[in-house]
Length: 559
Image 1 (cartoon, helix red, strand yellow):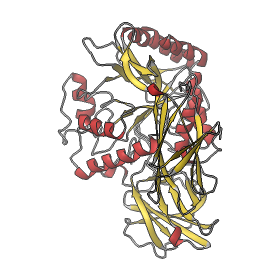
Image 2: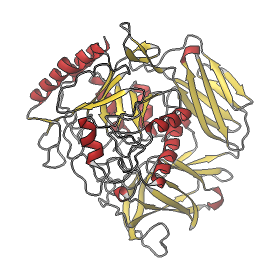
Image 3: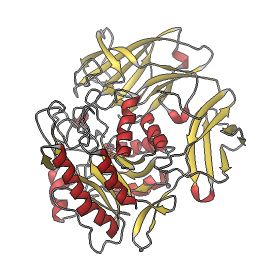
């Protein structure tokens, strides 16, 4: 009960009886849509799941075009009879239908959230699974992040199809569908709610020390004696089991609280466990040279997080992407605070809304849907649907401190109403309503600053957070995606880059922290395709900064 087994895709709902469907599948690309008949289609290409066909690791290296259907096929043997079989998908980009033995069993819309399907009635001893996927990328008003059909600069190669793990679980007739875990730091309590598939309310919690707590109303409240607080410096996790008849899952929680308070000098600040805490972080876009959206291994996920920690950073801003659950587990256990962005969508990227007017002081209300490329009503509805799914999927992760609904005005709309809705889903975390600009008067003043020095804004009573800055570029021959170099300042050697970062911290960030800055996010963790402004190269082979010096600079921010 003291650890989560390696590679299990959903660490806060771990079961013993599961079957991975990752590995080699067959696939094909045909013209059409999800209504197009696939009868007689030969899936003669091999693809390695869970890597998108655009990636090297998939073995395909081909983009799924907006007018195509990507078809997956795989055969598998049923391992358990007289059990319910749940088929899980970590994420499939963008819309899919799933077939078992030529019968449609379900589907999903949205490329960043998980879903599951009960396939029990359709199973035989030998089975064929078919997944049909369409991905409009930037040709429709859908959430797509940095994906673009014509990539380059800050836009990256599209990722289509299955890009997170696929697995089966074999369950008893009565089983646990989901958990909701809410720590109450101030009262040394944790509330654990369980949803059972038959709507019953009784289950049992078994803690690490063998204590048992039974529920008759769907929830258990546990009071802890002298609880150990979770911090990046001491990321203590409490492991426990949930038993519901024959079904048993392993999970964990942490005792921590994120809030806003005041420093000794009266200035507003972010608080961790009721103590002022400066969040110094990196923008993390979660791209890999060989796997694109999907890390080549569990060790690769760990490497990025540990590198950030070794450099003295305590926060990663997960930038307009949602990671597999194992990434959040590693942040939980290693001690890394996460700011979680929601994924951008909407119409065509408009420079007037995103780059020009906000930076010359002209503010446009974000109920002007046309200005922010959000006229499409269905796209706005899907945004909220995806928000529901993202929050439900990540609610239990101790590491997540802050949600970011919108970034730099990309597809921004009704941000203050959106924050109210988000708060109704999760009132335990901070919310940065509009990161960068297009400020609508949310709880924090969120600033992006490139090219010119950062100075604390005068007469600002709200907490001030520097949510992007830096972006200093160093292109290293033999470790780049292309001959192009993108960054906000260009340097020719590691020494010159490190000198520039040192000056940036000493002349801007550390003084701003003393004046009241609450948090800072440097751009960025790794190079991404044409962007060469990471602290590590895209292939993760060369760290560009002096790790020890970087740690010393960050340590000055929390003294």
